Image (cartoon, rainbow, N blue to C red):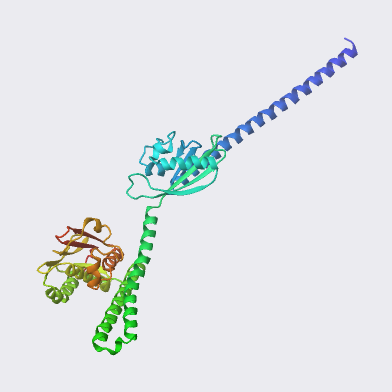
Length: 393
């Protein structure tokens, strides 16, 4: 073999070796790149799964129903609160139109309209047969969802209690205005009459002055009851051991004469040593209000009975009467501020319409509860239950 051939072969061998080394290095780099890509994909997938789990946990703990839909209003996903809210099995809602899952056609239209407009919207809905429940729905359109198609996030919050509280607030403001305006208008009218010359006519002036005093006393009672109610709602009672039976017995005796004057029989059945942890003045207000109401709404020859009993956990005070009773439609509202079953009689007897609301707030502020059982024209029983205080030696 000639030197030239040997040189060529040697050159080819070296070149081949270099190519093999370069190929191996390229193969290693490609393998490393693939491994890095797989690792990054796994990390991205894990991050996406973690993000979905976090989003799911957030939506499940938000206290709101979160529903993802497509542009046609078909449910893509729903959190557990949505399933609970509409009483469905897990994952049953997925694939169902909004109207089928919620029985709310207006909500389906709401979603479809938002999909067309692409605008965030909020609206309140009342589900059919929901007994005055109110949902606040907010819809958030997304041009591209997880499926690669347009999706919408529907958030439903039960605002029934907020709506009720707002109604109570408005009613309270209106009632306070009315209750204060009525005696003030009477005082002004009488005062203007006196100023116009009636003051010098003794026969006219005397009843007019009595009217001013009576209406002023009425205003004072309203303001006083409002202050009592405000304290019961906003302040923690300063408590001490109170024998409910002894307190009730004292108040019964103090109301004996008013009951006799009204032609009623006021009696009591009280067990001894029924102790509760309470503010004595507030508890006294509760018993006074209940007995005063019973006397006020019981006709002549009727009976009012005050009872105190207890068990291992609770002390119970009940005030029963054989009075006019309460109609069933009024029972649900009897503890509302300024709500009167018999408006004309309540005002004529000097009532402010706050007595039972005061009772409810004081009792609940002491960890107890109050209820009423009544049959129209057959009397009522108001029952107050308070945590029993166990006496230790």
